[in-house]
Image 1 (cartoon, helix red, strand yellow):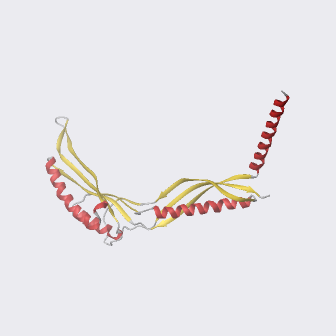
Image 2: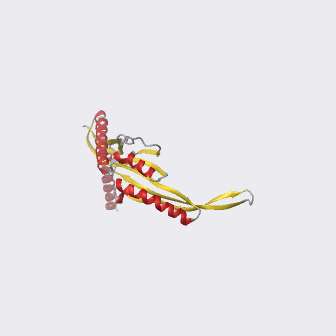
Image 3: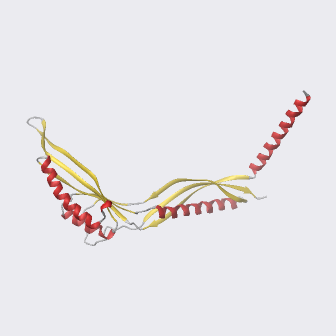
Length: 235
């Protein structure tokens, strides 16, 4: 019985010793949490837009025939300005038109409408305005969503990440020095926000004669991180 008591007392003493050590160790350090943003500016390297035509016919066949004629001319022009892999069908939709008859108080069929739209990317930005002129002359009456972006944003994003981490370390070191600490170590980092700007033109009206008249300025690529550091108080 006495031996069991001594064993229990020994365990309690060991536990108290360990806990005391942990408290002492934890009191020597504290965490620093910072938020940092890295920003990179890059020139646009692509233009993206939606080009197509709406055609009407008394019959579905007539609407389709007219659409094929117009879109064939548009497609030939598109292929002059960009590569086939940068062209894809975005919309192909035929529907019956109706009008309200006041005499019969009913909707009366009144032919068919077909919308055929391509999503197009152009990498030579100086060709955007001439391209819009050409397709408009060829019969394109659907033009929307013109926006400028970058073909591959991984490189500028990588630079933005590095700048964000540099700022995080800079902020954490300032806070550590202000509190008389040393031995700063990174414990955790999380991405809280990543953003790449685009320049949008909701509606494209009259295109100016100058070939690069629609070219925008630089695009912003930004990354925001939340980093947690552990610092040790100086002895």
